Image 1 (cartoon, rainbow, N blue to C red):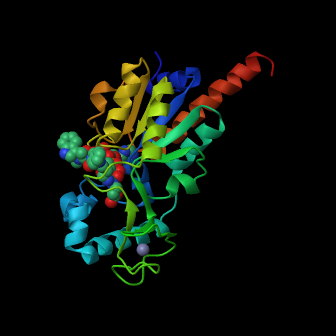
Image 2: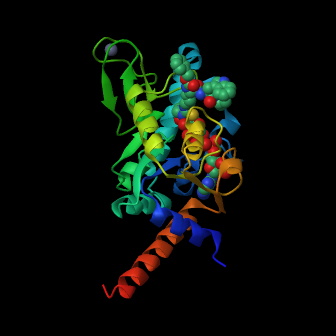
Length: 255
Ligand code: BV8
Ligand code: ZN
């Protein structure tokens, strides 16, 4: 009787177009707090108080203090084995795209190429009036930062609650979801839309849903496989099983 993780390895090997959806849980083992966990970012603050346009217009300094604290954390953090495992799965030609809700740059630093950042990028700041944007390699030294072009306030380059997702990333997301015959969902509570609807799109088209999470989420009820555990432990194990399978196939073929 095969263990669930071995069945998952079989499904990934058989898939023609596997995609992944990741959330804050994949960065947890890099030391970045998740949003809704026990020591989550929202624990001390409420999403409505910080990650909304209203919050920003009410108190841009407070919002920027929260973002610059997160930027410093992200710049000090490193990708963990879960990020690297997904980059390896892409290099093996098995994983075709990662759709991430995360605004950190850990997938990029782990080597992922086809990455769709649907909630923006915390390491960019953009002007609230003109088209000026800048990459951030450290938190802004004045809070809130002003546009060097036009003097208006700069804002974090992320998507806030109540804001539409960027068109290019949203289109890419739905194109990938409509091509996928399987989706690997890693470290998301499945609370935020439209991200949380992506696994359902794959499922409704006859694709399989694999979830890796330390505890059940809003996605679990539609998952074909639920592998409970830390992404940084489960994903490398999955790669190991896949490699063993491929070596056995190669030996059988006398490769
Ligand atoms: C939009 C960027 C429309 C900023 C973020 C009522 C019902 C349904 C929907 C709504 C509603 N009211 C409002 C809405 C829409 C709203 C929404 O979904 N609200 C929710 C809260 C109900 N959505 C929006 O507003 C979106 N926009 O709909 O626009 C529109 C269209 C046209 C014109 C105008 C408007 C925009 C949503 C984007 C919000 N921005 N982030 C920032 O980061 O500061 S969302 C924020 O939550 C982060 O991006 C985060 O990634 C995301 C989702 O959270 P998760 O990633 O899942 O993280 P979480 O902590 O929740 O869970 C972590 C998981 O990991 C847990 O399950 C845990 O068990 C697991 N885990 C922990 N450790 C590990 C682990 N797993 C594995 N290994 C581990 N080691
Ligand atoms: Zn400007």
